Length: 276
Image (cartoon, rainbow, N blue to C red):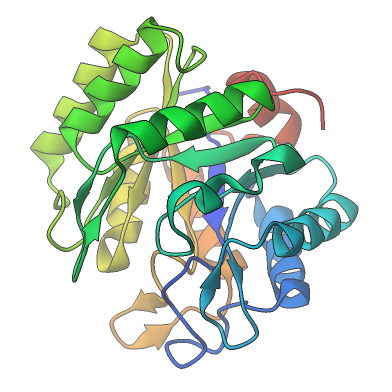
């Protein structure tokens, strides 16, 4: 298989802290350093959250601006993808960083259950976030936690609320949401190919399922996500020493399935992004 595989590294997230793994980068300088090592290891998308000084999640545009500045300086060409997730803010505050014009931003187009709460994405907020991404030339990464999210994303592309071609990430393994299941995963791929044949897709597995989802995605010809946001361990008994270590595992799987790892230039071309 000759199609290059884009590796996304989710460097921080909103949940894991240094108490879970000291390697989790929460300060901006740590995030830049960790991302640079992951970029050198083969990641070409940095999925970014920011934290307050006490490690709690934040949606502060000023923090995002400082992170973007550092990443552009130390990881030239890398695709910067900012999170509009609901753990770090409420309502339109979740999209307050979009005027910074990152290359990409996450977009959840529907609600679902999380381990201890409902991840709320009401239609009016989804439409506003999508409109802001169109206005600022930010490509959405559709985070699909459920089959209905894939269907909704294709509807939004059909009526112009999202710009095609889509980039859809299948998120599997979140407790109380979609489990890591091979038949469901294969059905996701078939459904997206049927409804949006020009779309690109990525697989993200949470916790222990991360490495399995990496392998399924790479073997099936898609792209994949790894990183300390989703999984702080290499295995049950070993903490991951860095984001780069998790990226290197994905690179090894690309080698196993004879997939070239996408360079940042190739990744931008595949996703139709402006030049870095």
